[in-house]
Length: 218
Image (cartoon, rainbow, N blue to C red; front, side, top):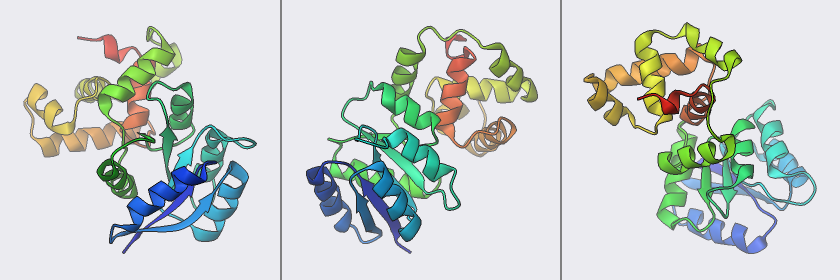
């Protein structure tokens, strides 16, 4: 079954380039395009895509609010934020609005295709080092916030360890090595962390971890 994709960018050339790349695959189908947020909402409602590639800097209804409306709508497609710069305050706002990750507009064709497939499968996409750098840059020194700190009370000590390692950008395999657990056990812990904290994916977990100061823990 093909992954259904909608392209949203105010630059026709960008949309055309992405379409050319995605059309070369056998499992991704571009079902619509939009040049601004209002068009995007109409196209998404009509085509019901699995994934939306969303530019954030657009005239009129920007990509952040568009992402928020898509994610809270009756058919919430997954959203990948498109950006020119990896350190972009709009990206963090997009992630907070419900996007599943972000992608640089000059990403390699293989990375674009991989990102669409990964997000369609329910995962988040963003290089951990870039995600952490982005969040650290715009949150500044991540002092713990009492409200968020209280949320962590629901976690066991092991789950809190896992969240701290997620915040530092470690993969499940790397967390398994650090904690001397099997990768399947780590996957279970990650799932419980996300469920207990009502988080959609690892990107949201990284943001919360930074807000709670977990990135500063040894």
